[in-house]
Image (cartoon, rainbow, N blue to C red; front, side, top):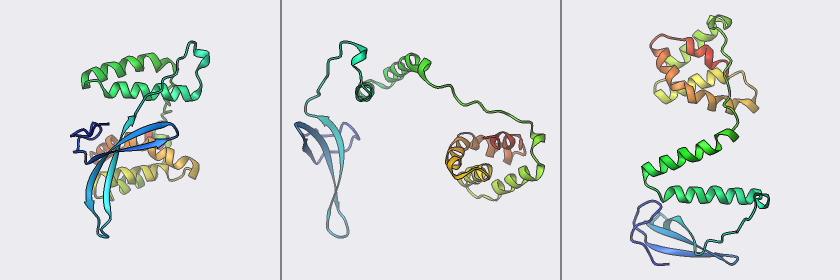
Length: 188
């Protein structure tokens, strides 16, 4: 493979191209020389460029697909999307989403309970923790930690993830004096 001037993956200059052989397949990497570290060791970063030869499997019926084939299809779609311009990529992704949407699981639904169902001291405790935090990220973290505090360890991380998706808007509302979003987050 000829050395490209710029890396097609990250856009940085390419110092050299490295070739690795795994079994009978050959893979190429763009290597970026970063200089030497404090110990005098050479520092490099590598970007995967692709195989020397793509191996395509012909599939005559859908019955011949296996799970590995499905991941190959996903990789092929990703590779094709990378080669499109930004607007074409958006259109293609929207078309793909239209095709797969019927097969996706439904989004989780929040069951809203009225704010009266929660003790006011619980809400005021959460508000106090948010107001004490200094940075916006610390406020989001404080809010999600307070909301998910009573969850078992197995559910805690998932609760924090769901909370973070909604917490930024809730932090702004709390700072403006509206605490109704806290009761919704406490239902996570």
